[in-house]
Amino acid sequence: MKLKFSKMHGLGNDFVVLDGVRQSIDLSPEQLRLLASRNFGVGCDQILLVEKPSQAGVDFGYRIFNADGGEVEQCGNGARCFVRFVHDQGLTEKHEIRVETTGGILGLRLEADGAVTVDMGVPVFAPEKIPFLSLTDELVQLLTIGNEAIEITAVSMGNPHAVHVVTDIDTAPVASWGPLIESHPHFPQRVNAGFMQIVGRRAIRLRVFERGAGETLACGSGACAAVVAGIARGLLDSPVRVTTHGGELTIAWGGEGTSVLMTGPAVTVYTGEIEI
Image (cartoon, rainbow, N blue to C red):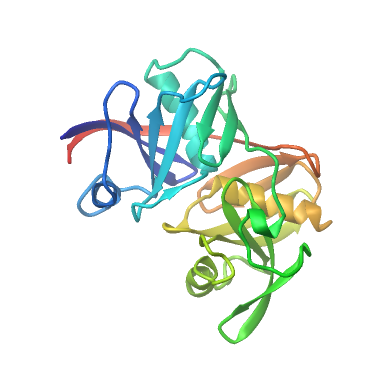
């Protein structure tokens, strides 16, 4: 089977994007892992599949698969690439579109300067909805990692995140703690582990160990989760500049009950065709 694809990235968080509107695509986990392999396939952090909508009032369907072949609910950097892809491929001429994901409906807007703004929806702190196994709904909770108890804030941006504040992300134990947080038994569907360094009231640095992908150069939903956690804890003021290894995002949140807005770039690297 031959598949046409676009290789894209949002701040270095890279994707293989597939048009499931004009071609029929049904890939097994093994085929997804091959496609994502940097040695044997195209290579990417996630695979994005554009589909026809299944309900009225939305423009497209949108499925997200991690490099390990597992399907996930949300990907902020991928959502920005999604908008660029459907425009570049002539699938729409709209500058504002609505897409359905397993994590909910997203509103996406292509800005005049080429940047993309994503309405990431209202963040969720209720432990049972993240899901996060906890006896309380406290904003800051202790999580035991090895022999150490660390403070985290658990939040869902359509997918689960655990945000940990560190003094310096350059020396933060992302490689060692990331996998332990990701697979912690208190997160039954695993979790994205965010390590946030506060630079000022409107600026942070961030590294994220993503569920099913490992540490990536940037994580859009992770940036949203970190900013939301920081604002909710009284550490940050909106809007916030988020600096990742891959570049910068701007995240705005008006507080409880309001949507999170993420603005940043989306780049097409190349298009191609692969035999699967």
